[in-house]
Image 1 (tube, helix red, strand yellow):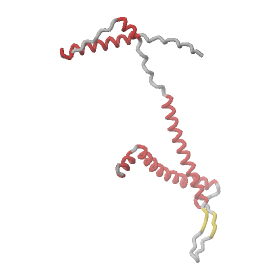
Image 2: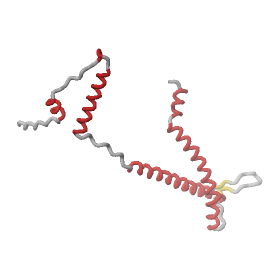
Image 3: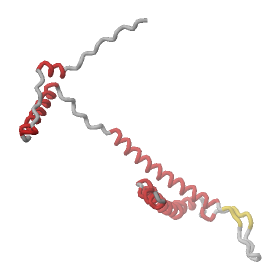
Length: 176
């Protein structure tokens, strides 16, 4: 099998396509969550904490120097807080999705299986046997004369014995 054919087979599997769709939707969902956290959730939290913009919170290690054109070196812990909140929102959304899928699977598993029809009674089994014999005789009568097969009749006593289950013999006692 060539590499192209093997790759085509790999790509055409349902799981790979489902995974690709999940990654694409996940990336889009990540953008939505980022916008939700940055634009909707963090501003009110910042107002409650005294006009704080979390995205601009940082710990400056080295001040910027305009003379030497050195950039400021800082640890942006405010962005880290935003990222943690985004993660918690995504984790909660995934948890709810998994919970929904699991509950649907539990309902599906708990659904009762359709009842199997009961086995035919002895009289129904006899009627089925008679029907099959009549159908065989009718087919034999409709066949050309050279191909006719006449079913052999079994004695009535043999048929009755054949229908009854064989009795089990008691086990012989073991000799020690």
